[in-house]
Length: 463
Picture 1 (cartoon, rainbow, N blue to C red):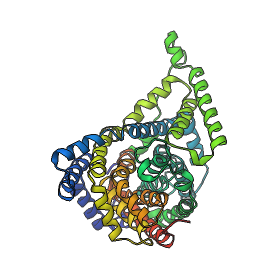
Picture 2 (tube, rainbow, N blue to C red; picture 1 turned 135 degrees about the vertical axis):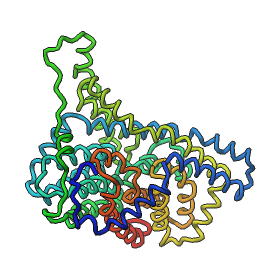
Picture 3 (spheres, rainbow, N blue to C red; picture 1 turned 60 degrees about the vertical axis):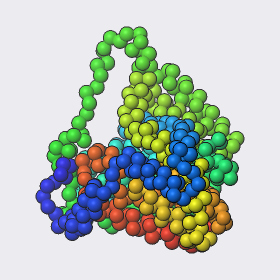
């Protein structure tokens, strides 16, 4: 295993048998998300054929009718992912992260500080959270080498803090519900402001509890210094390698000087942020939606990079993270069409009502979404599939659409701790395997599932 010492440690091997079996099962039976969306399409088509009055050709019409419904939403999420990457990838942010890493002097203090920073930024914007957690985590591993920070635990903290705390105002489902003209506006019964979902008292309290307790949980899981496994020499050299700086005496053409000029993007970025501040002052935080959030981070990214050359180079890297959204969202939209236009949504709604009560429904949505997210690890596309039946069922039981969205978003974040889809960029960056971090992320999963279940059962209608 690259990245850590190959010397076996008793502390790691205690749960290795269970972890390896779980990982083996995941690798054998959980396919790539593209395979799953194709299989799910066939399953939903057959369900529509057997449970509704629509025949094969009518179901194909339903599929085609829904295929492009998510086009705007897919572009909005693509922009969100790219702008989050661009902000975190800027030199100013990276320099600031290095200074923060150098401040704490002990392993426990470093781990707590790291978790708090990653958690807050992930709550603010999950795209930024992904990049900051990776960039800062690698700095922690290299700059704090010798303190006894267990490297697999650091990788797990990086992933779990980002995933759990990403249930904030940048989550796709709450932002979609707040965006005018969204394809689910009629199902939701109108627009739902962020102050009723991601910024609601219920979810803010829930997120605050997790934010304050998860760093302590990771400290408890931190092994003694003599048992800690840190990065090996080769990985240390890779993490500390510096790219050679460009020759400042290089003679540039006029076009190249414009590419390196900070004038144009700084003016545009400042103008964008001025408009965003004006919008918030006039309309309040509750009126934020996908477009406003993306607009704001466009401006921030332009200001942080300064030059068109730096900004475009970062965008090109960020685009590579969006392929799943671009190509798979139309397929999920087709499934939405099959469910919504065939009448299948009414059938599934009735089933949910039959197994639920007003007290248990939000918790059932939490558990159901946790299971579903193991196979469809995308909050936005999965919401298009689930919303046509979980929202109407909840309304019939007297549960607000906003609280159902909170249960949906929470369930999706929990499941990410035990399935490897979103972990892939973390694993590649840290040079770890999923089974290396799973013992720790599984503990986080169990803890947050118990905490979430307790809150949604105690407050089935929210606060």
